[in-house]
Image (tube, rainbow, N blue to C red; front, side, top):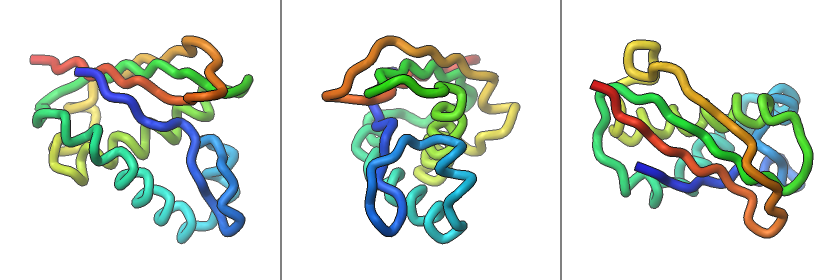
Length: 125
């Protein structure tokens, strides 16, 4: 199953578009982060609704980024927000190591007009 989610997001009082990344995550206050996580879940809910309920998964994340960046920083936060949204929406019981058996991520190409992450979810046994 493949879904497409944004890899940039509006965060902070000035509503500037930022990468979901560890630098932004580290510098934001807890209220802004909680709000961003809720808004991100709402933004991807249409894609989540295409999914079935999973028991055990191994996601693959394919990034189409608007500019050069540290992809590990982007991946860390996007994966957290995505897996939390899966659990909160009832598509996965938990995002612990018994249900999410690793993950792969890769940079595919630059796409300034449509930055995104394509997530391919492989269900395991």
